[in-house]
Amino acid sequence: MKINKYVEDLKAKSAAELNEELVAAKKELFNLRFQNATNQLDNTSRIKEVRKNIARIQTVIAQKNA
Image (tube, rainbow, N blue to C red; front, side, top):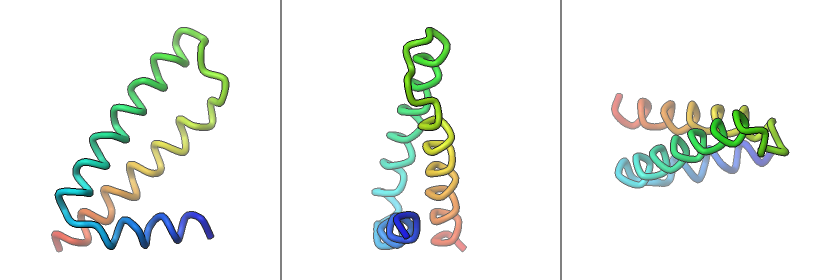
């Protein structure tokens, strides 16, 4: 149910807020990839989680633009 709550929170945000969140998520993914490459990342499943969150944000943005 946490995912549904996250998506509902995304749907309540404006387009500008969604874009800010998208940029932040992409930066986090970038940093996680670097940590993984240098063997500093302990929780590798976080990469998958962030990628899915980016997709969720992009989906909500597309729905708002449609």
